[in-house]
Length: 119
Image (tube, rainbow, N blue to C red; front, side):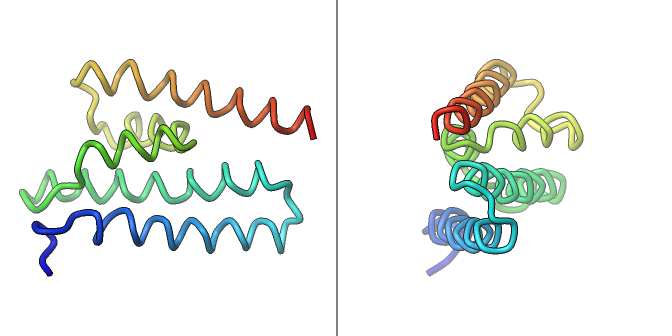
């Protein structure tokens, strides 16, 4: 199975695995509430995936599918996505990224605040 034939196997599956490990570590070692653990885990996974996509864009290699970047933001990684957009100067020309990802970041922070206030 090659990277081009199965991008899910090479981008999302490792991201889910690493995210799950980060979630468990935050929960166990920090004693963080589940919402905080999940928020930290997804954001710690999102930024490196954006960095990999930026590096691949510079090298002309295989890119992380855009739907993967969107999905990571939708499930709570919006803060890391916006941080990656700013620090890496990546995906800053596309309108959907300029509008959707800051909104998803705000929604993620609001959802985290709501979860912490209602526990």
